[in-house]
Amino acid sequence: IATIALETGTLPSLEAKVGDAVEFINRQDSDVTLVVSGLGIEMRLPPSGTQLVSFPESGTYQFYDATNPEVTGIISVSE
Image 1 (cartoon, helix red, strand yellow):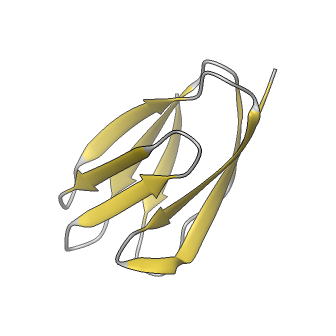
Image 2: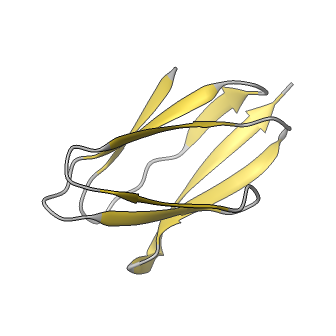
């Protein structure tokens, strides 16, 4: 399981394999509404909240904080 820490102002990029699970962890002091484009996922994470997301197909998935959509990250998924 790869982990992405959601911290104020930054969202990192990550490489994963098809079927891998990625754990998102909210390290901010307030709720985060995270959107994962290409999967149709929108999730609300409270402070210290976590969520696992699996990637069933190869491709490039953008994720972002719906409150601050200019802050984005990329997950590149390969076979």
